Image (cartoon, rainbow over all chains, first blue to last red; front, side):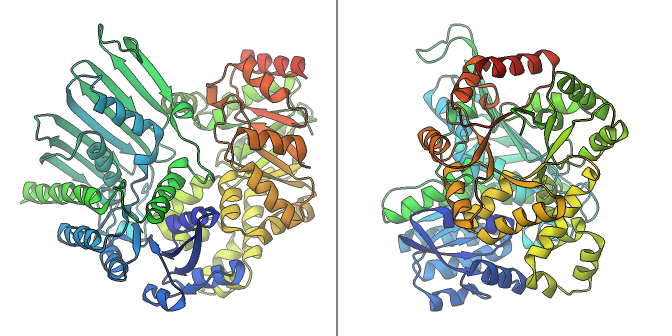
Length: 341
Length: 284
């Protein structure tokens, strides 16, 4: 049984709590949040041990690890504290708001030999895992173009009042939405070396961008296109799509489907020429407890398993891997500023 | 309880297999008239129960049914609440408390605006009742024999192990609406244990039941065992696993489990509704 502390009980924190609490190998020993209201509800109705300041959690009880689901601005401090106390860390995405902090955290995590995972849950979605497997197998030949898109309705009016609408806190479409797509693209083809033609567009927000568009350049000559918009209310919920174009075929995938097209004469033992569509019903490994999507449980199962095995083996979504997303975001911001200047 | 129940995913752009299909359906059912046409077909074929999420647009459907009592004498709604994306989108934009302010009725709004959040602290069950009553408002004057808690909330409460809330919900639905509470879940075996521990006897539980085990946490065998041996009334949904299983094969699997009380399915054409109904009736 591993003992975990949860820091931050917003939308994601509550979901993480439920998943961890349902996990037979985990005891959630303490919960920290700055909101007295949230804490008193958790304490009164669920009998959870709560503290206002996460730094007090270790005084309550021994912990093996923490799950951090606070706004991005607070990640660097909270993760540093946890690492310095030798705790395994799962932190929500993005890793943090500065590349410098991210580098330091990745190094510190390695030095402390603890599990360090970031909540890029799309890597646990069966259709995207299949996309990576197919690209790695070389079945579509040499990939020469990738496009990553995400659309949804987070900000569809000119009223907004949370950290998500504040740039300084790590809000905005880039860190909140686009980070997921950048991570998926990194997962499938590796990180780009540069970004061009960056558009950070404000639609309804005053302080942050609501859409991000850019062209990506890859070390091997491949090109990419990034398009994310969180103010599109034709989408019921966040919808993420990847398209990989190769010299012998193409893959289009989203959370529901992985669609493979093979050019004439490239059939393999597994796939015929033309289109092969595989759905999430065939591609998603089952989980023991479901809340909102298998991937949320799968990523925490992965974290728990890595903690149980003592962080000996490399694990998915490490700080070093998530740092690559922060680096791309930093580059996007830098180029966008350059374009304005 | 009716053997065959019509679901509503197809009307509101929800499709677990394809984003494109979902969008096509959202366009096809952009006007309530298109939804009513399908409901009319189902009703005339003898399907009298419509299980529907408390989606923003459900009020228009309720209005249409209410307007013609002689056309729909036996029409039965099974409301499923809440429409979670409404709250989740608002929580993303306005924060958790902001979302509550947006959806709670005016009395509650005043309390929160005044900063008297101590009310919430004292009585989270009172808040639940207010939110349930808000979601139920469109159904006023219509038959609602069962009111379901959506899986995202059922399964959240299950993960939190918030047993008293299950009891409070069931009590409120019985007392205020003279109806029975139902629970939708993706975690059937685990939920049955919890409802047992809550003292909720012979509950109505709706869950994915299909031969490929899609969205059946605990696995196909655990589900089959639970259905065969435990005391509850199972409603099967996702029987076709969003189209992954051919209809006859899918329904043979579900109808083969004799303790399954009802089957919920979504369809948008007369041919599909007729075919599904006939298959279920033939398979028993």
